[in-house]
Length: 405
Image (cartoon, rainbow, N blue to C red):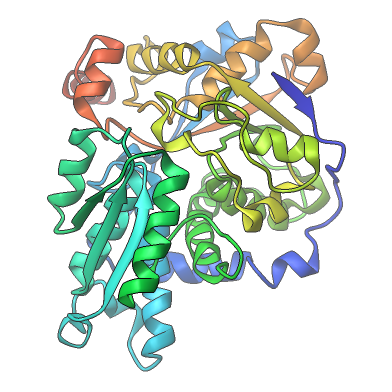
């Protein structure tokens, strides 16, 4: 399903949104995180895939590959860690921000406990950051999170709490446990009375956009290297973090933004239809685990409501086919390890370019320059191998051979 957003605007980035998230604050997050050994010291790659571009009849198709952001395997290594740093600074403003994740203040923080719900990647990011900072971490997992993902989080030192129900139920349980135990929630979704930390998480994701600007040498208040940017949905935090940065940088010349989510977890599409942060209409459960979210983040929606041009849903099998396409590579296209939630943008582009009417609606043609973000690698290696018929290690080996050649 594809719908146009009637509230989308091409005005400059609003001043009231800049007071919440700004390029300046994102660059500050970038500097602080650069001191952490948990993420790569260099920007993640921005790959051009000319064979896919040719097949889909666009001028350029590019993938920002977050699978190599950190050993955690996803972009979430930017959100929870910087939110934890900023929360600790609220309690200890005299701490050096760049030293918190180096463990300098572990003794002072050893009785401090943070908690969050997760589908997998956010919890891994928070657990790793808490371990390195020296504080305690509790992660709430819902019924559909695999044991493989649970073991990865527990391996980082987090205490696991399992519940029945879906992601939204796990968010409620994390809030309840925090209230009862005096713990601090570090969540990537906002709710009434809880916006400051989700803002910090979203701002961390702006690091990705900052790197894209550097890599394309895009000038402020001008059109950049891409005409279209297709981003994953979820609760909206990642999309809001990137869009806010790109919107502020490009102003009225911003790219055409399309947000993509599973058909059964369509909370952002429903938000666009209803005009406010809304709930999904389907079962929510999806192979795209990171996007299996039933309720939009009200804070994220404030940024998406007037910046996203179209909202779109895809089927699970379409995301899986896109995983296989990126893994396969070609003579000109580097093979890429892309997880279940990492290929939503390509799956959507395949659908749009397969239908002339849909392409016209979103202004896609042979001159279009399209960007997607591969938000994760094989964060559940067994699931990855089952879905594409090849291990992540095998794909990574072909990638290394492609680069060497």
